[in-house]
Image (cartoon, rainbow, N blue to C red; front, top):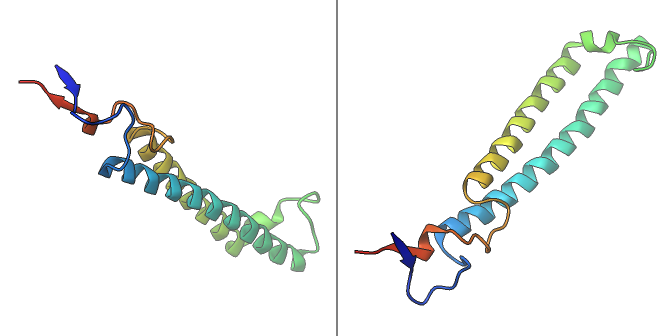
Length: 112
């Protein structure tokens, strides 16, 4: 059985787990932004690869055979994986509501 720790409110504020959640929130947001930047960069690589071919995405998929563009696309998977991992860790740590996790272990103590 558990009971609320003396002097603690029903909202977690300032414990190490709460700090970890805030770091994860920032990491997830930064990784999502990095993924967007990667997309802009990869699109630039695609445009460079299309120049010698004289084509566009509407005219065909020959640009997919370009090794530089293929590498740029593969890099995108790492951004997606990192952002997904940060979101999963955040959910495991109590969700995206740092400062309002009501069932934080620091708020309860074991009764003897």
